[in-house]
Length: 115
Length: 113
Image (cartoon, rainbow over all chains, first blue to last red; front, side, top):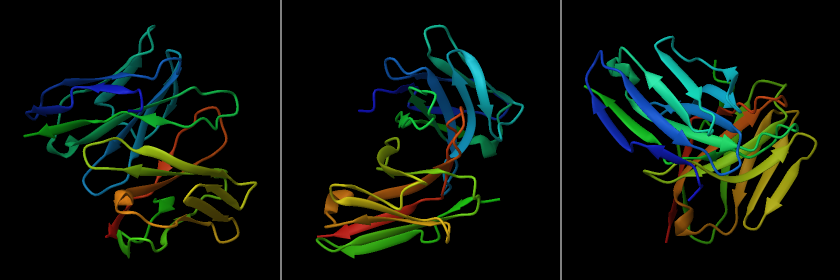
């Protein structure tokens, strides 16, 4: 158990819909990362938040957005869903010290299926 | 543009033998490398890492080697155990204040009893 929790574990929805994925980081971790893993692919970085502020952005679609709340949990919002958005979405957290070499600990992921 | 590549989708070894997983990268700005292990229905689990100022890092049965000239790293598992059967991801990062990781596509390791 990494200490990172994600809900829901599975999500099935239809095209055009909007969903929200939730992540609670490990206790004390200030940084949250979101990654997408499509079928047979590696993990693709989407976005990072540090202590409530957006820190880095990857190839995140405009239909996707995220935020980190004062209690440090984060939500990833996916809207106008398309079939190609079906994937595993992972959240990771790290302490994120100045050295920037902190290990990222991953949650179990949310499997999104768009029908 | 795949900056981190794991060219072998799968690897099968006998229990007790050495497993060698390989990873190549193209971005010379990467200075920190990690290996993660992933079981089905679970998130990736951190295994071992190496800074670009080193060429080897060892942790128990796991050793990571880094060849900066060749932009290549490898993970050695000795001896391999059936419980090591999983997908292994190589990841790389530039030193910065973001910590963003670039992952390879993964290699599925099967260790046969």
